Image (tube, rainbow, N blue to C red; front, side):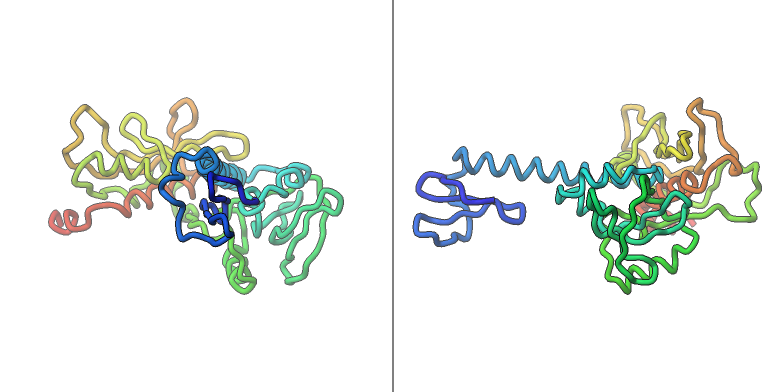
Length: 286
């Protein structure tokens, strides 16, 4: 973006910040206070705020595609790729083809030449599928090897995919199990602290539970963990309860009915909430 007149100065947007230079072209360390309400400065700052919201939205959308392992038409990728915000969110993600096999790390999208990838041999290749997927990491059989390869390639994923923590259902867990208490018993001094942590981590609370809805194979599953219910007074202590999963009607699902993504994302939520517990209170109680 070029320089814009602002009184006797000129202002521009660089790396997300408003910068200023005087009439002789000398860059100033900061924007003069008297330009605070100048229309050019106000406009650039509003543009900065919009760009930040746009970047967050692009990243959120890509992460939703990944969590749901949604099929994404390559025409859609080609349409959004020229936008730097979309490109940053998509770059270096592992993509899989129609057969579910890993195609490589996404490096470029061209409407005529297709997708530019770094494949698992380290070669730059072009593929032209109609649809690809950005799989949730729990669905990647060779996740550890992919992580090692990503480190060698110095891959920097903006969307959390390869290095997203995953949990797999224990093979010895009874299939009729309806809840797990791995992260139950996390003590919090005040209810509001735990509810605040739920919001901070991007989850929602409802009816005394922290909830994480997941759409997997077209079906919605909700992971939920007890955190304590607001009753107009939230200064009393509380602790996390067992983690369970329900269908849209509220019916409790057995472990056998919970898909790998819903299981992993539910455990991820429970672990993140549990990590904020008051360890000193737990030690005194013990």
